[in-house]
Image 1 (cartoon, rainbow, N blue to C red):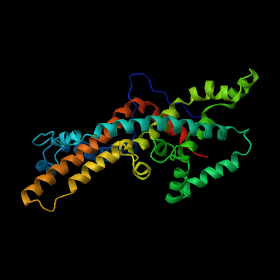
Image 2 (image 1 turned 45 degrees about the vertical axis):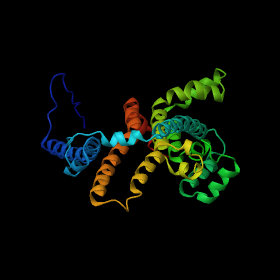
Image 3 (image 1 turned 90 degrees about the vertical axis):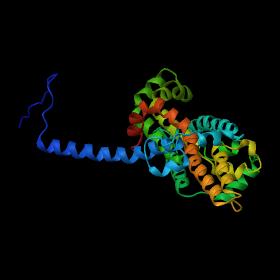
Image 4 (image 1 turned 180 degrees about the horizontal axis):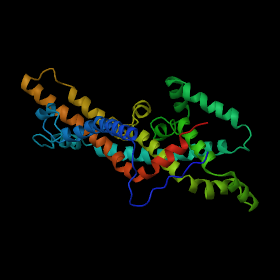
Length: 304
């Protein structure tokens, strides 16, 4: 049976059937609901951070009695800029280290001629489900002399096995083996092939994985809380912001009702201001790598 090719002339809209129209209508409704569910909390947090404490409970998307009290309280804290600087260091250095380690592991495992990739892959997969535990990890960090140093925050989470699998799959499925054979005929070694061919062609997945690592390092606080307990000057922003909220919870036993209400209003505003302050760098970073998301995630997400 022969089938006719359906061609659409330029300037002529596609005619949808009734089932297509029903599907598109339901699709738009579902997507609109998802947009409302996701966008409303984000807009509300930003709005609430610029509102007065008494106006937060209105749940309005417009600032009520606009005020900068929350931001003034947060930025008056003397260590806030130190925390910002430390978090930027952890995010930049940690992302670079993580990308290097992940690439060094993903590239050999993507090569079909690499002997022993099966057992190595199994060992990597085991670490996704089992860990040494907090105490053994702490003792290891101590024996390596990394306590009270920045490396204790950067190195323990240097590689995510999931990200490594995504990168390996991207390299295996998106970079033809013919390129390797041609480069070998021209006398190109493995390192030169990686640096000159594989990495330039892996820009989308590198951007996506780099953003994942950057967000993870920016939001990380547990390792710093455990390994930097004696070096407050190395605290990331997350721990500094936690101190601000904790200090506002302390010493409230001797306050009268009016003072407690005023303190509670200030705490509510500060919570939203702290959220905005901590998320701002990541929100600025997202638009620059957004164009790589669709290609990098869709191609690298099929694991095998």
